Image 1 (spheres, rainbow, N blue to C red):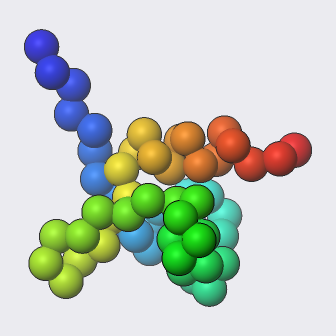
Image 2 (cartoon, one colour):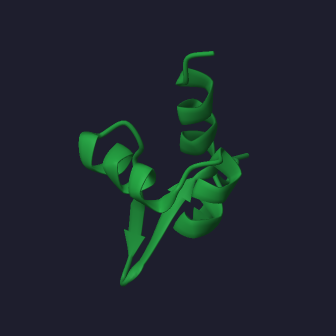
Length: 58
């Protein structure tokens, strides 16, 4: 059985990570946070958000 990796809308994902919009766009531009685009909408995979948060320095 395949598990489904949920897509979180970009604005919701950055709020969950506690980031401001500008910082989030910088992280995407630098390749530290991967996004998925579906037409005009931008999403972050739940697993990618978890990976990003886990990689942050304490």
